[in-house]
Image 1 (cartoon, rainbow, N blue to C red):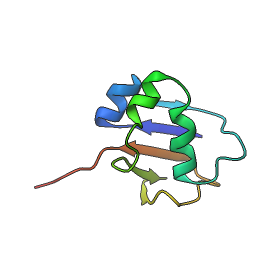
Image 2 (image 1 turned 45 degrees about the horizontal axis):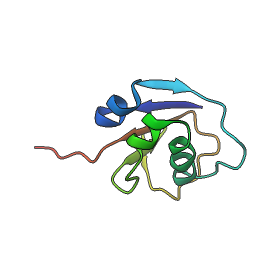
Image 3 (image 1 turned 180 degrees about the vertical axis):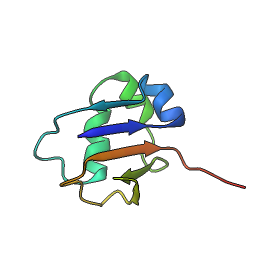
Image 4 (image 1 turned 30 degrees about the vertical axis):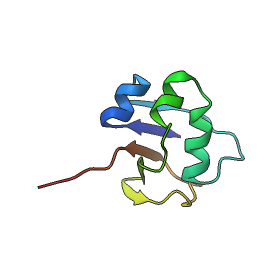
Length: 83
């Protein structure tokens, strides 16, 4: 699965994107975030407060309990404000 990181999530992880084979027990966005936290210090730092990170599955905003099965891309980004 392709994972894409934006803004300070990208800066903390140190990469803009990567393609990973996920374990079969990763079912939801929240599961994925929890699994990523265990991949190393930089991921733990990026996802330390998962409640503020937003996700999109195939460019559609997704909640933490959204299933990721069949997704081609999951993106993570901080909350945004606009004007």
